[in-house]
Length: 329
Image (cartoon, rainbow, N blue to C red):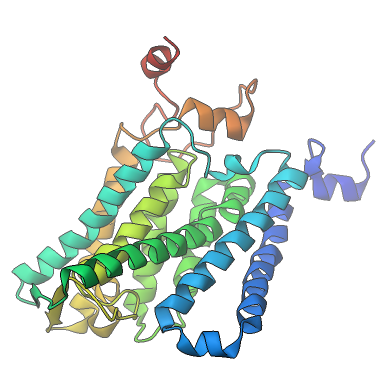
């Protein structure tokens, strides 16, 4: 008969999901600490010559490697699954999911920018960047923001979130991690209660994008293009950070509660409207589902277990049978 300690901490021969969630938290902080140790160890002459965003690029790269290392340990020793089960596997549909995420992220931000322009709250004009400068800036910001988006998705929709979903249901996992996502941005410049609420709110469609695919590619795509289009393309602040280079130059006026002012559109209620629209699409779209490969990675190849359902999400949430037959044929 199992002891009291075993009943509290173990289930099915493994550490319970809720305890694995709590184990992942110090792991995330350890990844951050290790990244800072490496950065501090760099020669002062190198750091002095590096502009802010170059340092940010290196920090994002180091943190990505550290997080993957931490989650590799957790998935291997506590979950007995491959790292790809966390949602970064290159399964058959990963490119489609990433592409749809990229389109959705751009659509959300361009909708907000269009609303500001139509309401005469913002004016956009071309910036005076040379083609070579625009190309180099685009490549640099693409790489940097892609890694930053991946890092945030690994933390807030990756391993910790997934263990919470198992422990306290999808709705509970979304509520906890979305609130933490909002609170994590309290240190950003020019934040307001609206920006904090919107940042927490955007955690909902990002979490739904994961839950409906059991893959992180779509939320990474949404997160990346949200920041890239907002900062580099249309020239508005991203969560309080203004880019030094952008394709367009934006001039914003009007009430801060509408536009977000110096924080950027994420601090205004126009963004709230766009986020709500994206959430509805992600909930209702029948084009979004779990691929058979991801189901096998997460549940096991012989498992008949079902994913926890999300209220309001229509069936099917697993790859439709005709597509599986086409692929096998």
